Length: 346
Ligand code: TLP
Image 1: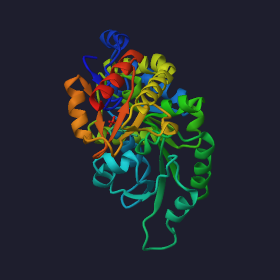
Image 2: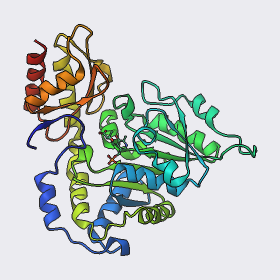
Image 3: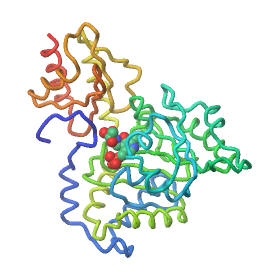
């Protein structure tokens, strides 16, 4: 990459192996189901997460949207976290396009919901006045609280609850491989209880474009219709899926390296006077840092000085940043970033 960009892992460029695979990809018309590279990617995604079928979509946002549209009808309610991406950052699309009402419950500091909060949010299906609760959505890793991985045991408990009330369980697993690396377990174990899972090929896996939805064959065929309805039928998408295949085959296995650089960054910055970081909460490739009250600059002012040094960071309010590591943020780059902060704060 041509600069040091810590605003997100979404900024990561494709790897040389991806560019090579894209240039030589076999293609066909994916709307007809005839793109061999897309078909291979969909099968690999399903197999990796232990589900029957997969669907290649443009983005994580589209992945969550087609999944919820496939599960819920108009007027249905979906229980989700008040810090989850679908509620905060997906343009209200489930409501605008699907007539789905989000019912938010608090995301706790560890990324989980209190099971009693879920129970209390489920509607009385006998009451004619109330919307029908159709679905529970988890996010793993839960990024609105700094990237907290949810364990398989916790997800299984939510799955049991969903089953008890006849609800679907969807997991926004945009960073499910980060969660799996943090917990040192296969991603498929984290989603066993889920009816559907979305995950991103971009972000930490470095593909230039794309996300996947996986679930039962029947669910995926409904999601595929929704993708078409949204204009997401992509024709010779094999050129993109080729990068996705490299992402899945080569990048999942190295994602723990991004957690190591996040930790290196967090520990280095935490040693500087004026920076506050809760090191216990650095679980994946995200570092949330706060400027101490003694620092005479705002986050914006610090970000501007970093930018002058070719370093981009994501602001989180007046005195906080989110720093996200990825493939292009090597240990040497991390040292450069720490030195830049030190110089600015001196
Ligand atoms: N997150 C982006 C921004 O939109 C905030 C980021 O920089 O972290 N689910 C989760 C948990 C996400 O973090 C994101 C993207 C998405 C879904 C949406 O993915 P895309 O950007 O591919 O639509």
